[in-house]
Image: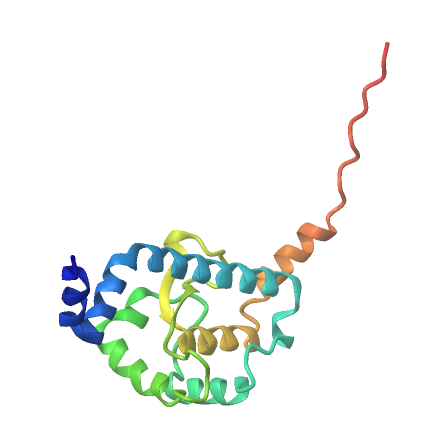
Amino acid sequence: KDSGGVEALERLGTEGFILTVVFLFQPRLEAMWAMKAYNHAEVYFNLISSVDPKFLKLTKLDDKIYSTFRESFKDLDVKVLTHDQLKSDTAKERWRPFCNQFEGLVEDFNFGTLLRLDCEKDYVEDNTVFATRIQFFAIEIARNREGLNNTVYMSNRSKSSSPQKPARTTKNC
């Protein structure tokens, strides 16, 4: 009778068991998170490419998020951001109080998501940073309201409205 495995799990306790499961499945969890983050980014980019961004409403609290963001970050130019503006120790100290005030108000406010650094470019490796969901909302709401995401929208409109070349035909001889 081999109950060593069961006894070992019991000795771990609930917390130890959870940590073990997370450790064992971490690569799979990371892959699932990456896929979800990528899908979110793709959906958002498609949205600002097809709908005039100034009319987009990302949350029920867009007005509050925007006004609070602009009170806290009056001079932040959201057109082109740097990693340091989001990730440096100084930036984290500045962002933390802003983000935490949305706990309980914005679902998954502190979950990770992908954010474009330059609002005129797509989600590509050198233009993407990991940010919290509330940072994403604050910055993208500001970009939408301040007309900065219009470049993406207008670029897509000009592509879709440009005349298509007629298909080439070949006559049989």
